[in-house]
Length: 385
Image 1 (tube, rainbow, N blue to C red):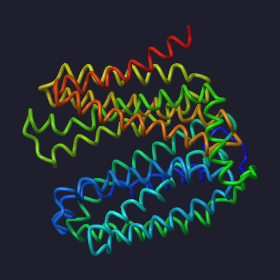
Image 2: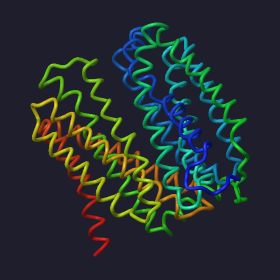
Image 3: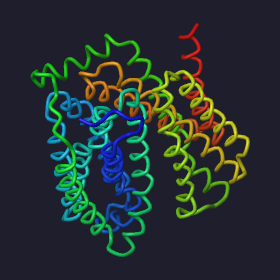
Image 4: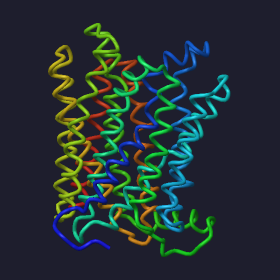
């Protein structure tokens, strides 16, 4: 074990970087959809590939992620990364559309390594710095998501979309080998069957009102986040006539979330969850109000996006860190429940903002995001009273 200090040990930084590399695998395909659609003559349905991957990911969050509580964690991480490499190779070599979609589904099913590393990192953090460890890993994940789109787009210009997936597969295997050597073994203390493991997740959710609260706040955070990022491209195109390259540059606002995520975890370590939660939610709300007020100002929308991403980073890290403190013997199951709620909120935010945008344009989408943000403030305020 590591000597207790006031700094996170190197292994936590390694886990954060590894989480970023692993998270990128899920998102490489997004800027490649046009090329893939042209090669397979499926331009009209290529956009469903990320949805298939996300469906597999959501399923795995509920059914595979809890295994971290009964299976040796290092072996599970290495196994998942090896399977990710296999899925990426299948994507790179798929001869037809059905196998392409099958490989995309497999990629989602085995792409949970970042969510395995987040609770795993708390075991190596100095006492009282578990939140900082989770925030750092989350920052790594956000970095991987942001950089994946840029790297994939640039690399595809040189080696094509199949070359991108081949390169990612090699990188996944190298990462698996690195973590196999660098991570210590971490045997779970639970001895139970898989059926009991899955059933116990439901019991934990029923028995832990604080977990339900953090799950609700996490869902509202991602709903607000997706309300903006699922509609902004259409708004920028309609109002300013921006093309995909310019619209893509707006994604750099995600750097704000990368920078603030560790802050959310550190505030939880200091017993300031309420400050982190309400402060993050207010930042998100301010971002939406500015984005709405600056509807025809690109700079105003950029600043609004920065505030939104900063607040979302704080809120997400704070709630995930606080949730993982509730059941030390059930880290993976708690994380599974929280992340499942988080992504469910994102799906709801995407749907509701799309519906609102169709009827009320940009004002409707901003109203959905602002409502989700203020839900957190109101709920936390009522709980306090």
